[in-house]
Length: 237
Image (cartoon, rainbow, N blue to C red; front, top):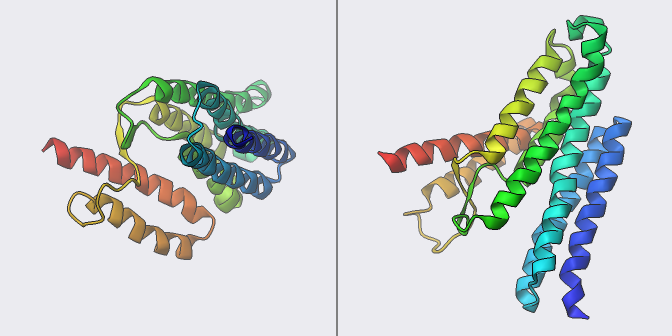
């Protein structure tokens, strides 16, 4: 019986991603973000339960990647698609022909494909035991969900909002499959030395959330990427 517990939790992650996608297509972005967060919680506990119960399996690993691509790949793509679709209909914000306005939103689904590539690489890459190579898909999904929920109204006031969002989508796709090392919040020891970047990140997350609310989550993910780049530069020097 216990061997089915991790896979059941993984399936709950997948179902959460499906529900998030539904709300995204409905344009109810805060509900989409809510279920992405719920999916992230399930994603955290499926691996933990597999290790605690000592029931890890190849099927579980593959199922986890499939669930993650739905929750952290397809669902955020659907959020961006819905946002672009709604905003491209506004002539003053679009600055595009009617045909291009109809086609542009579909480019959002490129992110789902790059998320799948990132997950496939993660399954085969043995370098990612204590850190990540490229932006993790949950971080990317949380960035876009919180950005649209927290800053969506402001973005719609910008004259080139669709272009800005689309450019950000392409940047995210690059980061997902890039060879940029990014730190993970895993600690071998609890001391300051060797964990400086992790403690700095954790401490600065609190004021960002307090000051910016939901959009603070997007700021935290952006800050995570910046700190990773700074850390890489410091290590090379």
